[in-house]
Structure formats: C-alpha cells, structure tokens
Image 1 (cartoon, one colour):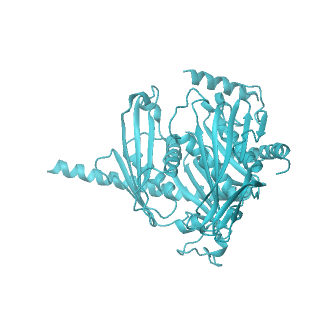
Image 2 (tube, each protein chain N blue to C red):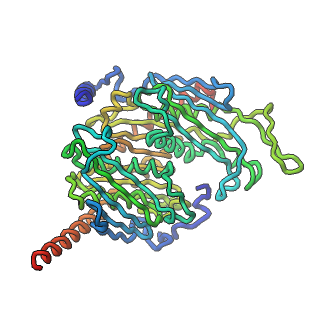
Image 3 (cartoon, each protein chain N blue to C red):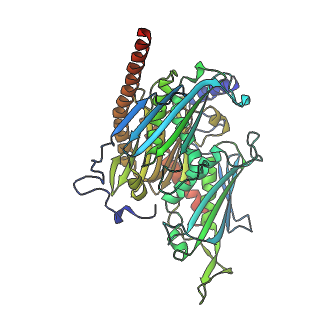
Length: 266
Length: 251
C-alpha cells in the first residue's frame, strides 16, 4: 500500500517536472569524490551521490595469467552490499544485486580498456599483476551502481602500485619503495536512468528506485557506449531506450569533468 | 576476449559468416512445447548448437513462506548450465555469471506475466543449458516464455529474444560462441513483440549511437520472426493434447 501511495506522489510530482528531493528530471545529485583516504590500499576512493556513499579500494598482487591471455594482467571486480549501508542488506555472500553490479562495472571497465592489461604482464605466461577492485556500499540511498562505478574509476586513476622486477634467476621481486600509476587508456563513466511511468529520470534516489518500472545503466567511453544493462521488472520502448541513452550521454560528460577536476586530468 | 577479431575473419567480404549465414539471418530455430511431464509447462529449444530445456512449476505455494508477496506472485528463475554444456567442464555450482543471468532472465520474463492474479504464490522457472553455442540467455528466454504459456500462466504477451553482435565491423544477428569470443560486441535483447516493450537489453562492447539504434531495430525484427515460431510451437502442443484427449474418449 505504501509503495503505491509513494509511487502516486512521485508520479504526480514528475508530471509537473519535479522530483521528491527537489531536483529536475535530468539533474544529478551533488557528487563528491575523495581519493586516497585508505593508506593501506594502492588506490581508493569514496564517492558520495547525495546521501549514497560507496567506497572502492584497489589492491594488487602477483599471479599467473589466464591460459588464453598469457600476456595480460588480470582485473577482478567484486562488490559487497554491507548491512552497514541499509536496513534491508543482510550479511553473507554477495546476493544477485551485488553480483550484477560488480559484473556491470567490470564490463564497463573491461570494454573501455580503462586499465591497459597488456602493460601489467611481467613474465608472459608466468607472472602478471592482478588488480583487485573491491567496492563496498556504505550508505544506500539509491543508485549504488553509479556511485560504485565512479568510486572504482577514481580509485583506479589515483592508484599507485609497486614495481615488479625480474632478477637474473628469472624470479619476480616487488620493489615497494618505487611506485607508479596504473597504465590508463580511457575513463569510462557510468550513468543510470530510471523509468517511472512515462518519465525518465537520471540518478534515481532510493524512493524513486523503489517505485521505478525499469532502469537503464550505460557506461560511456568518449561518446560511445561500451556497456548497457537494463534492469527492473518492467519494459522500455525502443524510443525510451534511445532517449535514456541520449540523456545519460550528456550526464556522462558532466561526470567526466568532475572526475578530471578531482584526479587532475587522469 | 583479448584476441581482436581482426586476427580472425568471422565474416567474408561477400557478407557470409563462418556458418554461411548472412548478417541478418538467425540460426535454424526449433521449439517444442510440453516436453517434460512433471512440469506444469515446459519447452525445448534448439538454436543451431545451443540447446535448452525450460520448465515451469506453479503457481504454487512459496517456500520459504516469508518470501511470499500478499498482492502478487513471486517469479523465481534459475538459469543453469550443465557441466558438459561447454568445452571445459564447468562446475555444477552456480557461478556469478549464472546468478546474474538468472536475474536478467527473470526481469525479462516478469513484465509479460500477470502476477496480480496469483497473490502469495510462486511461479518457478528452471532453465538448463544442455549445449552452449552462444546466445544462451536469449534461447533461454524463448524457451522459458513458451514454457510459461504452456503452463497456462496468464500472460500479456510472449517474450521473444535475439542477440546482436558486431564482427569485423558488421552488425549481425544471433551470435554463435566463436562470434561472441572473437567479435567486438555482444548485445542480448528481448522484447514483447506485440506490445513493443524491450524487457532485456545488455551490451558488452563498444557501439556508437547510430549503431545501437540499428542493432535494436535488427533485434526487434528478428524477435517478430521468433515470436511466430513460439506461437506455432504452442499451437502444435494444443493439437497434440487435443488428439490425446480425443483418443482417451474413444477407448
């Protein structure tokens, strides 16, 4: 009953061009990015999207490459929706929502080739860098997807990883005193749109998320799309899809500017 | 995934793919409804070498009870690959990929089901991939939606599905495993053809705005073709059932 009333209220507001938190339909919530707050991590970033807070950490280790990509480093994205973040989150292994989020972000990073994995090869077929990207939700007020993606990107951009060297015996050693940035090829930006009734809104908050019909998450690299995920239990028309992508593309531009300001060009 | 399609010719200059298809051609598609006796509804789908069973149980009681919703049915979906369905044996335990696919397939099917008709009950959809050769989630949706209809579940429409790929710069329909692995793009897509609603859209790979629009319209066109085959499979099932009933009366 309450969701029904809430949906009605949200839809009434939307029809007059407003949202429950006072934003316009195509406004992002205020974005705040804080990098390098975790000293023990090679890279880290806390991202606030309104009241939503997510933190991402980058850790690296030396491992063996996959058999089909002997000359490439390994990137692993994991996400946890901790009970600290919401009364509805429970402890335990990642549920389908956390797994989906991690996989959508992974696809965005991978397809944009954000990290040049070829440069993370130390000894082909034997030793490569493994880059672990762990995303943790800390406060869930809607759109954990974009907050997490942004945190992952900012953490990767500002990460400083140790140097690996191969000695005469062919053994791999790590020099922790000498650090360098990860090899970056592009900056992918993820934007989520929600469909509520016949309206499309950008960056849905929790109230909107609870009543939305469907979501479209898109990751942009330059002006192209490199990953899309439609979510939610209702459908979208092709026209709505194209319009959502068009709005999301503009928002990605805005967010990219913010990221560049914070990390200094990247 | 790392090997660029440039190193492998997936489509010839005259527009033929490795299996001889044109870019806008889907593989041969066979659908059979009502193939598993214990299930309330079921279907078997063969799309080239992608082979899938889907079964529907329900509406039935929800266990555990606390998952029940007072105003509608809960839809549960399990997409699972048999260990022998892929080249290297896959552990039968659900992987992260299977958990994600179970979710997106459920969300592709749910918009078609009139869930309000069965409060406090569950409709379970089980999908087994017997042999995987690309586009398994789309073939799963084709099968599951026929299984739901053959279980007599009231639906707004069937859900048809087809993937779009990009190989050597060309957009193609219904990607195979090789085209997925060595191609540039995989875009799984599902829709309710009669209602013109997209219920699943994923993209893994880079596409420009015009390409996305073209890919969606290609997929939508293919879905209309697949939709007819789904309806035929259901009709065949009812003709079969009628025969059995009539024979039953005679004896």
